[in-house]
Image (tube, rainbow over all chains, first blue to last red):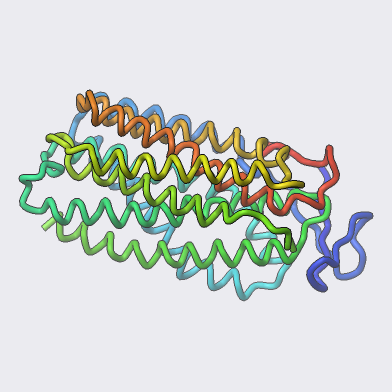
Length: 208
Length: 141
């Protein structure tokens, strides 16, 4: 499959008939990696089974692994990858984007769904979601932090992720659109990264 | 860069999403014990109204790339139906029933519709320069 070409001189300066001087090749990629869908399917089935079994250790495993992945990826994207991406040359940025962001399309929703579903089942089993639980306020605080992160991630970050990849798939990608959406992606990743620190505070409080 | 006059779909969608997330948080903060449903129903109604208004406003916008919007929205809807289904499943597993289950289910329906609208709008708003027949599906390589 053919790669697309896009010039880097400025917004709107795009090419269609082969890359002129200054143009770069956009590597071929899948917006949603098909091979990754199989892994997501396995994780979803495992989650359903674990919830049905209602055993503490598998629930704890799914909740902690999902939550750790979610937290670490948010922090790493927001504070490490994001700033680095912003300083890369445009060809390097496109190269990283076409390899990293399709994976994020699958990883993040899966990690979030696993964390929340396994977490709710675990809290029901342990009784930590009951209003009489002495740390119930902290549990509700965690819901609120997760809710705020979900609104930012689902309303801004995920759409920007998909839109960047869709733009890069076009025969004539618009560099200005990509730049704008990438900024939105990086800033929202940073915002959710900051909010993950609140998650650390709440979860360590609940665990002690 | 897209400079067309489009309705504030992202802003309204974010607000709608915030309301429905608040409804689910409210329910989750009370379940599995008794939940006074009034606040959750109010949040659900407000969120659903915003979602409907958002889509109607967008529908009346001339020249919007509906082909691209629907192409993205259907895949996103599939993905977020699965996610909403998982959340519904875990509440069903814990014997949530009656009014709380109905409000929760409707909240998840609004959630599973709002996110695809936001994703599809963000993609489609930049699609006006693409000639017909050049679009690819989200899984196209």
